[in-house]
Image (cartoon, rainbow, N blue to C red):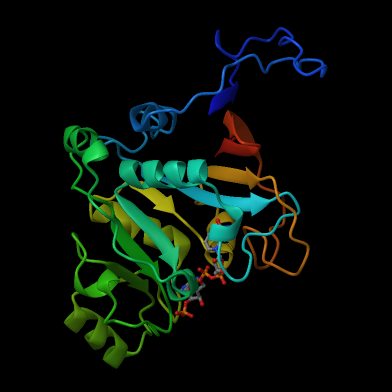
Length: 276
Ligand SMILES: NC(=O)c1ccc[n+]([C@@H]2O[C@H](COP(=O)([O-])OP(=O)(O)OC[C@H]3O[C@@H](n4cnc5c(N)ncnc54)[C@H](OP(=O)(O)O)[C@@H]3O)[C@@H](O)[C@H]2O)c1
């Protein structure tokens, strides 16, 4: 792993030495090495004050992976376009979050399990006043989910189900019987993104992380509640008709984000963008 942006004293802006007859590239002198989880956690820390237990404002970041040609999945899953380093960052972002928000289709297709308590993040989480692992919050209108999954029956923290006021009472009852906590965050059949963020903040969950999928992320962007995007660009081309990382009706004016960090490993780019 090496940092490409911001340029620091280890990301020398001078031309790196040539190797194998290939001229060096400006800005790539940083020596690639494995980063420890502490180092990654520092690199991906939530902005100070924005989402601290004392801070009033929640901070919503998304973590997504895309191929060079914009595919957000291959064969219905994101794993084939990911990498070991991507999974370390995925784990780090979970290790920093209070709650992971995920769309029901991703839960159904990727077989979501409860977040684990990881020793590597235990001290950091305790110091930040967080529980041992993030809660998972599933967004669903239909509540058509398998409530016998471990995600619902045996998480460290009760799994949250974000839904609308018009959700079927029998599905709500089934979810609660399985141990889930149902949170109404919309006046009709669906969840209203801004209301979901407020509802989670009201539960003391302010360091928010969404792992998609694309249909959910599209709504979060359209509702202007997304503060940050952690995007992995996977050096792969898949062609096909896979979804992009965000889907749904386009926004009237493109949302503008600025690059705050760029890491690289094995040709995978790990970017952080925040809303301007
Ligand atoms: N590349 C990546 O980083 C990445 C990340 C995540 C997922 N994926 C891939 O994306 C695919 C799944 O994504 P997707 O876009 O089809 O689905 P999704 O966003 O994961 O889930 C869509 C579902 O979420 C619920 N939902 C979304 N918005 C809602 C709202 N406002 N109110 C209530 N419920 C709402 C609905 O559930 P109900 O139908 O239950 O009502 C809807 O069918 C999978 O192939 C997965 O592998 C890729």
